[in-house]
Every structure is written in C-alpha cells, then in structure tokens.
Image 1 (cartoon, helix red, strand yellow):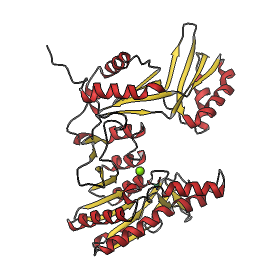
Image 2 (cartoon, helix red, strand yellow):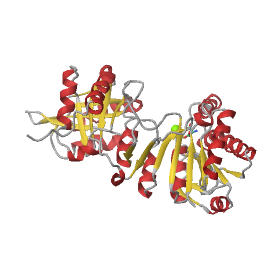
Image 3 (spheres, helix red, strand yellow):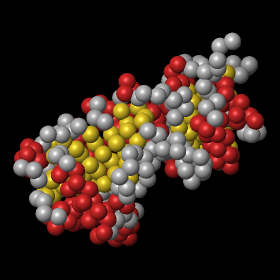
Image 4 (cartoon, rainbow, N blue to C red):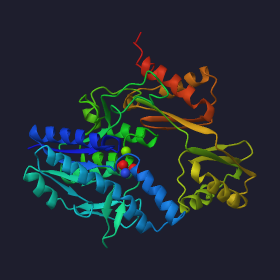
Length: 413
Ligand code: ASP
Ligand code: MG
C-alpha cells in the first residue's frame, strides 16, 4: 500500500475550520487506499507569540532548554486538535510528540539536528490503518530534553519522517500554489513551476524563496523522495521537486530570486601573499559568521582588495573583526555597505547553454544597473547590486529569461 507523508504549515491549520479541512484531506487520502502520516506546524502566529513571551519573561537570552520546552508547545496543540478532527470523521488517528515518535536529535537547542527516528511505533499505527499525526519542529536529545529544529523546521521533520518510512511521496501543503518563477508580489507575470530538480530547489530556497526549509530539501534529495509542494486550499497540482533525471523540461532559467539580507565588506590594499585570505576568513568562520560571496581583485601595485558578503545581522561584527585584522595583512582600510541586494537566476538548463551570464549583464546594463560582485555555479548566476534596484532587476530578468525565454538556443544559420 502506498505511504504518503503530508505536512501542513501554520496557515493551513490556522483555525478550527482549517483544521477540519485538513482532516477531510487526510481522510480522503486514507480512503483512496494510502497509509498516511501527517506532520503539522503550530497554528499560524503561535510560534511567534511563544518566542515573544520567552523574550518578555526570560530576557534577551532565555535558557535554551526552557525556550525549546516553550516553543515546541505550539505543535503539540495542533496534533491533538487534528487527531480529534479526524476522529469526528470516523477514522482512528493518534498524535505523536517528537519524543513519543522517537525523533532523536543532538542537544543543540533551537537548531538541533536529527540523528535518527524510531519508526516502530509509527509503523504499528499506520499498519492498523490509522493516521499518525506528528508534531513537526521538535525532537528529543539523548538525555530526554526537548529540542527544536530551527524556524520552519516542520518541513525538515516531515522530510525526515518520509525518508525514515521510505514514503512514496512527501506532500508539503502550504498557503501558496507551489514554487514560483519569482516573487509574485514583485512580478505580476510570475508563474508556478510544474517540476524542479532538488538542486534548483536548493538554490531557490537558499536565495530566499521561502517555501521550504533548505535542510528538508537536502534530506529528500539524499533519499530520493519526491516532494510535492501544493496548496491546502484547493486540489490543484502544485510543484514537484524531483531528481534531475525526472525533470522533463530543463529550463535555462527556472527562477529569479533576490535577497536583501546581506551586506558587503571590503578590505582594501591587502598584501598579495600566501596566508592573507586565511588570516581574514579564519576569524570570521571561528566567530560563526557565514560568508557568502567572496571576490578578490588584484591591482597593478601588487596589492589586492578582498570583498565579501555576510548576513546583515552579522555585518557589524564582521566589520569590527576586519578592522582588527587589517594591520596584520597590511590593509589600507576597511569599508562596508549594507544597501545591497543579491539577485540570482537559477536553472538546470544553464549546464548546457552558454551565454546566460552575458545576457544577464546586458539586461541589467539596459536598465542602467551597475553590478558590484558576480558569482556563478553550475546552475546559478548571482550579482550584487545597489539595493534600491532589486525589484527593477528582478522584473527585467524575469521578463527577459522567463517570460520571453531570452536564453533559448538560437537557431543555427
Ligand atoms: N512552528 C515552527 C515555526 O513557526 C516550525 C514550522 O512551522 O515549521 O517556525
Ligand atoms: Mg514553513
């Protein structure tokens, strides 16, 4: 019998009516001849409220252990309510907290990593034809402490459960219709993608398409479980996230994304000698600062400029560290800029098409947008530009690549 794992996000279980609606879907899937395990988030707004309460009572740095005990309660409410709603429809359902289902994690509170799942209890329930209703976002460490997986972590719980149960599909029910070619709030012509590869989804997710937590995609990719991102408000198909071989149409550009959460740091006039990069980037990494793009340019006089980007909330710290290290590498000065945006185009088809970067630069030039930094990977090109041009750049690139298919191979003459 096929085994389906479904995950419902906060909006989909946002009130009693919506929970009943989810119960109907779950029961329909069950009655269609599937085993069904459901992973749920807290009702929308609930986790934010709990986080705010923790700060109000516990100060800026509340105990990490108690914080997780508190914020994990949102999901516990949802599993009980959803189980009740399924009972009302005449089916058996049993709720599981992270601990009850044997979701073992490390002890790193509020960003715990899953180590193993004991599927025995879940399987017993599923084999009896009952629904297993599982609390997302939470687990338990070796000592029995409650842990949480980081904001948006229910996606990762769902995918981990799907992998452990070797499910046929992991359906992610959300309040949007699927994965879009770009942010529909910025570009009216944005449309839903039918299929994307895990690799594309990882790029889209890490670049700020907020549909799926990145770690969850990595799980699914590793185990080859197909993901179906779809709306919980209607029955229409959403977006399938699948293996590269299963993507029929390899789009040159499948998505255009932007990210305003980075800042740029430049260390100017650095000695061009071995060990310089290590001297600068070692301390950043030791302080847990996540460096994204790095560009080094050599100038005529044998010195170089090091430019890199970091998350905006680590900008001040990164700048201070660079000021501190500057003398050791003979740097002239350190500069920074927070008013930047990273705009990227992503697509599997870039692997077989040359000229995407050149076309991207032309499109931006035609809008008078100056490019400050560039990085590329096999299926992505990112540029850093002035923040105020972010939406203009996204619209122009989406129009050129997605709406007009500018990168289609030219007919040979
Ligand atoms: N409730 C948690 C959050 O809001 C986990 C989740 O919804 O995925 O981050
Ligand atoms: Mg989410």
